[in-house]
Image (tube, rainbow, N blue to C red; front, side, top):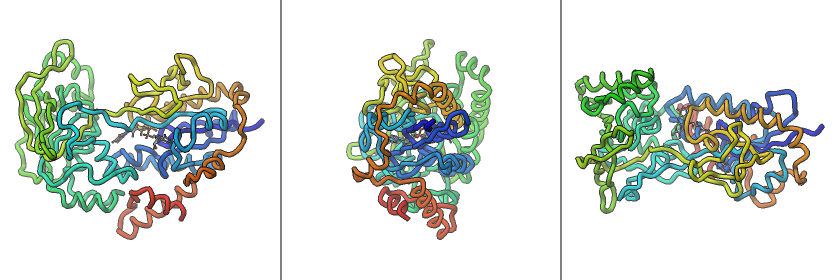
Length: 448
Ligand SMILES: Cc1cc2nc3c(=O)[nH]c(=O)nc-3n(C[C@H](O)[C@H](O)[C@H](O)COP(=O)(O)OP(=O)(O)OC[C@H]3O[C@@H](n4cnc5c(N)ncnc54)[C@H](O)[C@@H]3O)c2cc1C
């Protein structure tokens, strides 16, 4: 019996875990092509997870093993929806798995948001991660104050990178220009802002605790801003992570500053109302908020002005559609039946599956995508018999079609060449790896 041919759109953790689960089982022979719009695999593991979180980054070793499998092909630098249409994929594969993530940031919707110096944490993260689509430092580092709007792990990552002494970051894979810019940075005060109280902040404990362990950095917390009302007390009492976070915040609020060179101010009950200009960010006006009994947040009219030269919003991510793929605008996800099978107009669509952030929304940790991948593989294999008969035809290789269109596809070997070039570049500087941060450079490296 001929093998089942599966295309996975997106070589992030969810896509690669799916490929792994499809190959690991022995009931059905499956050949997998993993496509990505970038010349490199690993999605937000490479371009989101903070470069100084080396243990987390080492998951790339596990995911690389998936690409090393002879039954899995990496087709990088291929934009699905542009270089190849969805119909062309569905013609050539028995099944298509959507794993294209949700990497577009949400906006604040306040005046001044588009001023130079006000941007998304996504842009800043992309910059320091050496994403090939990045442009410039994204966050001006020439003013002592930076505001980070949001109280999740991304806000914590960004605050930590801004506050950390640059020498500690030299052991990471950050591109050279990033290290040089961080070395010149005059940032001393990072203000992390949440509308609600600490019981509703979404930091995980480890990430929060790490802020208090940074060299020459004081974490500043105001006791009045972490006072809990009855509802918040109940939430904290029933959630051990929250309880530990609140305990830590209380300890910080009681600790006198040590006179460290940099400070991270964790502020609660404040919402941004206007980014101040007129030509670039010169401050952020924030309003004190209170949480009503029904859980809604109301402004109190009490305003404060923060002396900042940059505003980074870290208030969540959202998926964007690919032409021809079903998409729920309300949730920013590809709709499924709950077991990875895609729904079109509410009905099951044979041969289409979705995993990871584009199916679930931007929640969970890297490991959550592994369970998604397994679910998708289970569903696909259960459908195997019907999928084999469903393909319209077109037995030609997708690679030929892409090459006939002049797409410079980066193969598994091409990615290995990029990988080797980055390790070599790092080695010359006494670092484990230095990322190549522009698309042309990546493509040149892929050609060895
Ligand atoms: C800043 C940040 C820090 C994080 N840190 C942590 C952490 O420390 N620990 C943790 O557990 N989790 C962390 N996460 C979450 C983790 O990164 C996600 O759970 C995970 O990456 C989601 O996997 P995914 O495969 O669904 O999406 P992604 O990782 O986004 O992968 C999607 C892939 O699809 C590709 N793609 C998109 N559009 C197309 C297209 N049209 N054609 C072809 N390919 C396309 C993209 O290039 C990308 O490679 C972090 C997330 C962010 C944003």
